[in-house]
Image (tube, rainbow, N blue to C red; front, side):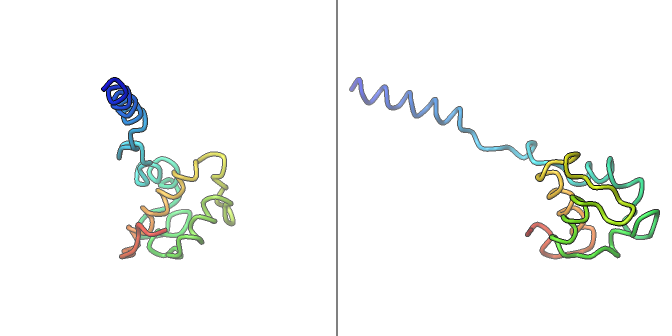
Length: 104
């Protein structure tokens, strides 16, 4: 019986320490876009950079442009985490009307 109690306590501790990530831990693509991208990009029309709806809809192309930069756009590797870049890609694809926006 003593072993059962010890095992139960150990499992409870592991369960508490190994809690899964909650939704608030996932970066918000819209907030990141508004903070880092909105000064040059609008959703429906050209600003300094192209409109979101006119951008390539391929996730890899978008991810590469954000990570490495493109033409006059600066690179964001080192400024944004991979998760933040992915969140922005999902947000861009949603705004483009892509039905598979969450699939990267």
